[in-house]
Length: 192
Image 1 (cartoon, rainbow, N blue to C red):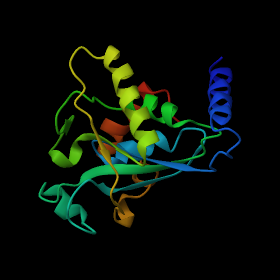
Image 2 (cartoon, one colour):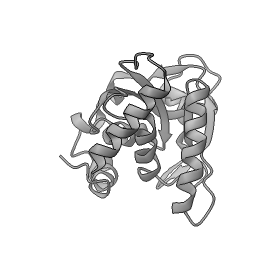
Image 3 (cartoon, one colour):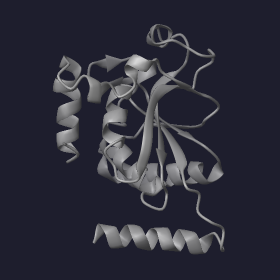
Image 4 (cartoon, helix red, strand yellow):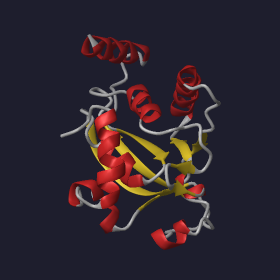
């Protein structure tokens, strides 16, 4: 049933674009706390082509992990998700986003505390902005307290250092992966 619904949404979207070909890929830049979690969740979704851990939303060009951890750069840990909109829509990406973290806690996800762990959606263009705002309004019905997620324009995305990329894949038995990421994947039915 979900597959049929997704196909209907995609078809109506294509019709709404009046003959314009759908792009082969789009990007969503999302912060849900630690970027290792974002990456591990979204790389498991059908239609996602790649997920890159990185930094966005701050003032320092080309920040390092150590600089971002100080909270002084203004950057958030994010993941940039490249996806095929003919397979998975931006709206579906956002639906998973709201389930993948607690968007009601300010600058905190579990034991990860600081502005770099804020809940944030960086949009690329007015269409993504409108969809993100609509999605946030719809998601609010599932929470007893207000969602505090920022929705901001993406000005620059900086990929994180190589050792942060594919962290869960490369370190599945690391303590953070065992105690934080694996339970999150189980909760979302995304276990391998």
